[in-house]
Image (cartoon, rainbow, N blue to C red; front, side):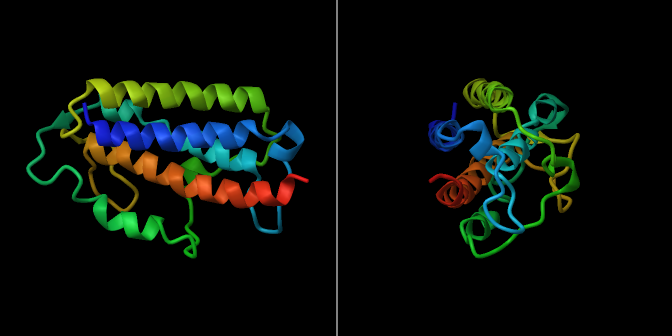
Length: 167
């Protein structure tokens, strides 16, 4: 088990649930400013991005490189909040009203499944069935660490949204 990844995952996802839980369903679905996602859409985007268990449980092979090599260059970019990124189509959130209980339940389920993967899987293996957007295969460690980093970035976004939608 990789304690560093687990600690980062737990901190990021606990903050996510805390932020989303702090909102009423109306606030969750309120557009904070023109061109922004709602807090619910951020949650839906993360929910969709957390659908990685098929990748992690799929075909893998031994990795003959640093198991974090492909993620390290992304870290700096993801911590630069002045950069606006475009989401892959498969994880673009819905424009439909988000049910708070359903969203939180779905997120918690996928969060727990990834927590279990961090605790039980050999994270150094390279996942072969799906390439990360941009064309590279990722190790399990890179997929899970990316999800933690991705969550941290969106937690920052949620904090900005919440400042606008809460009285």
